[in-house]
Length: 222
Image 1 (cartoon, rainbow, N blue to C red):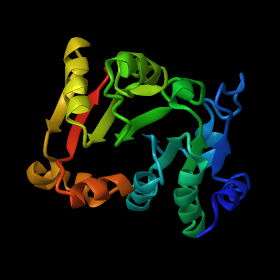
Image 2 (image 1 turned 180 degrees about the vertical axis):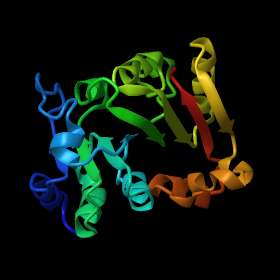
Image 3 (image 1 turned 90 degrees about the horizontal axis):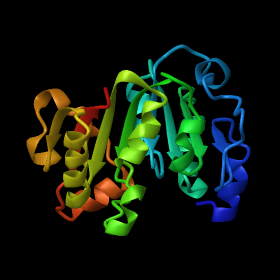
């Protein structure tokens, strides 16, 4: 396994990766609004995985759906390396990764450029003082609105009961469209939603191996 330093060096050469500083994204970012044209080279739908970690969902879904594009976003380049390397080795041309803070996500994509969002096992930020850091806080949902197509789906998978319940409250408070949810996905997953349990992230496997319940919410912003 390469060292962290070797992964960082690789990351800078990967054609499916972009990396930004922790403070900002350049104004006039060239790919904003032009991901299909300049990076992905097709007109297929674009799906984001926010807080993608090692990119298991990003590459797993890309393998299952070659007719869609998948972009993973995370702040840790050495984590992203795993998914990016897999995509390159397996010639998954419908995959890309961005290393940046999700606070800047609306600087990366243009109006209606994204069709769907996955939020997979994010930090639940359980302290009340860190509520605004939760990726389903209204602050973040308003950022997503800037680039998510009307009717675009948002998926949340989490082991955190507090984040699950908090997100349901946010959905109700903002009169958003709640499509389906469960506090025990592996016990309650219906036959027509089996894809939800087909791919496991590294953390999801840790949780399920310990017998912890996985929660899931699917909703729309408009």
